[in-house]
Amino acid sequence: MPEKKQRLLYVDMAKSVALILVVYSHIPGALWQPYLGSFFIFAFFFLSGFTGGTRASWKEHVLKRARRLLIPYVLFSACLVVLSSNLTLLDLEGVAYSRFCLYPLDVRPNIIFLRHYNSPLWFLTAMFVSDIVYYTLIKRIKSKKGLAISFVLLLLSVCAMDQLPVLLPWSIDTMPFFVIAMLAGHEIRQHEHVLSQGKFSVLILIILFVAACYLNGNINLSCRIYGHYIRYALVSGITGTLLMLIVCKALEGYGCSRILGDAGRHTLTIFSIQMAVIHVCINTLQTMGLTADSGLWHAVISLAIIVVVFVVGTALSVVLRRLLPSVF
Image (cartoon, rainbow, N blue to C red; front, side, top):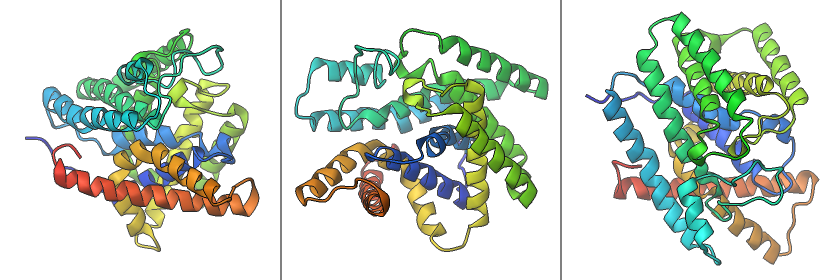
């Protein structure tokens, strides 16, 4: 029997916070990218391992994840690509390849696959591939020694694949990094008390997070950019996600925790359509003669765009769940 997971409010809150940072990063002029962008994608994989069960058979799990990730990928890809004004064969190849570009981002000339509103959809196939490998490992790891060996082998794979001249389809080259995040999430769930640490431990996490971000620079996992050092990308990913979980757990029951928690149940749809909504918002603002160049005005407009993205995405998710409850 497939297991039914009990939702954790603070985890759904954390998903919303991570997604807010993702959306903000896609708004032109976004600030503090080395810090805000250092953990939000890592966090989604970490949280998947944190909440994932292990009772279902391998076949049941694969079929469920295919239904929940690949069918939305095909549906959103079809809709978002069709909305593009200059559809070409390259766009269709991009849907099959499911990477933003063919070569690392600093290579010129490059081949850009996900050129339109479908650029965030790489995440769905990356999650599917990573989840299958993660589930295969977690069903077979029976000891701490086995877990440690898996971590080492995965880290070596990350380093080896980082040397490839091209980005592999379906994020196969960054999959080991994402699997590490999922295994870390699974292990933290076994020791959930670490999310109730004292002020000193939180201070240590903050220092590690800030130091790793400062030393590492920008991260863009969709294009296999880990910053200057892969080890710092792991440190910022783990510490940033832990800090986010600690804050969300402490704020359960306060303020807008319920709103964030409810939005966290619709992250897949919001994540998938965010670029289309951002594009419409920015075009509308430009038509009205409004720009978000810097300072407080940029913060106000960014917040407004984020709210619109979440409202539209949540509304669409509710509709899709009624139409296709087994998928969404």
